[in-house]
Amino acid sequence: MNTLTIRCPAKLNLFLEILGRRPDGYHELSSVMAPVSLYDTLTLREAKRFTLEVDGPPLAGTNTVEKAWTAVARRRKIPGVRARLVKGVPAGSGMGGGSSDAAAMIEGLDRLFDLGLDRHEVAAEIGSDVNFFLERGPALCTGRGEKVAPIASGPDLHAVILWPGFSLSTAAVYGRVREFLTRTPRPVIDFLNSFIREGPQGLAAALFNRLESAAFALHPELAALRTRLAELLPNGARMTGSGSALYGLCASEAEARRLARRVHREFAGFVAPARVLGREVAWRSRKSGSS
Ligand code: C5P
Image 1 (cartoon, rainbow, N blue to C red):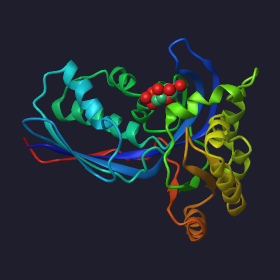
Image 2: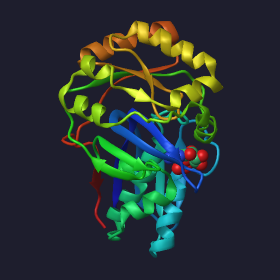
Image 3: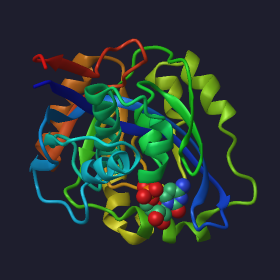
């Protein structure tokens, strides 16, 4: 029986602007996302039917791995898999753990059963961020987030990530964003120019997330946390996605580790140093066994 182990990285939104509300209720985005070295791990083993075991706190709603299974099984006749998901990325944190798990499931099933899937077509059905995780590197994401254009990375980046221990609902944060939209959205081009050239210090001023105001309106304590985190880190702090995780950029792994310890001393909870992953990093998967 073949077994496949796939690492599912988290992501950070380094730039996120909202261009407007769409007729379908979603929002038109212009966002730069990058994978980071914080992972869930998905293991798939061929089986007679589908089962999923999750090692981590129980999540509300149907797991995205199961949604991906259902979407693939609707397109192809496949026997089953025993799926085991080990969570390392906090859920409801804006780091895309669930979307990354779904992307890994689509890729894993495609490889395990040699299905020749249009992976992007399946991904778009499951969630707005799933397509990004099929790309394995930084990308400009547009549409509702599902249109993904890979971008080249610049100098090495590291981050300190703080998850304050509570989750935000993506729909609730988007539901509040209208009052914070401006007539002239911030253009992404300035960010892209900085991203290719600048280290963390130069890039810091270009980091942006329109959803912060909405999330902070829902959870004022998150704004206070960001202010304090920005005092502890050398290059400020931002929220990723629809929150609630916050991050700040650093220049090296050693600096990220040192600062993560300092942040952890003050906040406790989930604090992690992470590397921003470029396209060259092989982080995907390992196949073993024989059929
Ligand atoms: O696509 P996904 O299931 O991740 O989105 C969750 C919710 O976030 C949507 O139901 C919608 O309310 C909101 N959303 C949005 N615009 C986007 C992405 C998500 O309004 N581009």
